[in-house]
Amino acid sequence: MADQKKQFTKVNELRPLDSGLNLIVKVVNAKTVVQRGRPQGRLAECLVGDQTGMIIFAARNDQVDLVKDGNTLVLTNAKIDMFKGAMRLAVDRSGRIEVDSTANLYVDETNNLSLIEFERVDVVV
Image 1: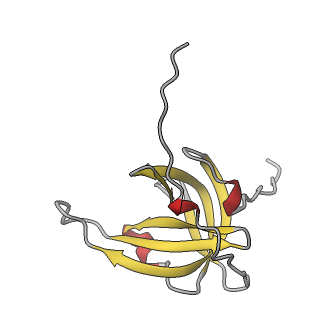
Image 2: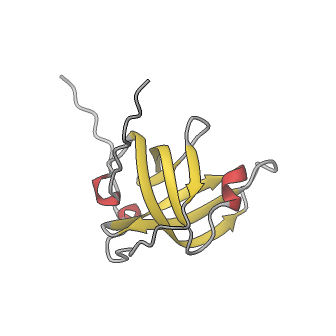
């Protein structure tokens, strides 16, 4: 089987409910969140981004150990979840997160995609 070069997506290209995404992002800010009603599992909400913008990334369980401020992450098979009308980046069981210590990314902090509120519109055909 031939090696296929991964196509990496930029943060400003993300759209609601996208899946199968590969991104290289830098962690700007990470904080652990206590989940109400769910004693098992850990959750961290991180502000991640690249040179085109930023988005909130929801790290779960073992992923929490990898998301430290300043780390550069390679996200494979990531997806966009919607939370209260806003986009959140996530990596589930079928994806991978790797820390890349060689990359040095500049993050555009003026374009936060998680601040954009989307509204679901049902269209009758």
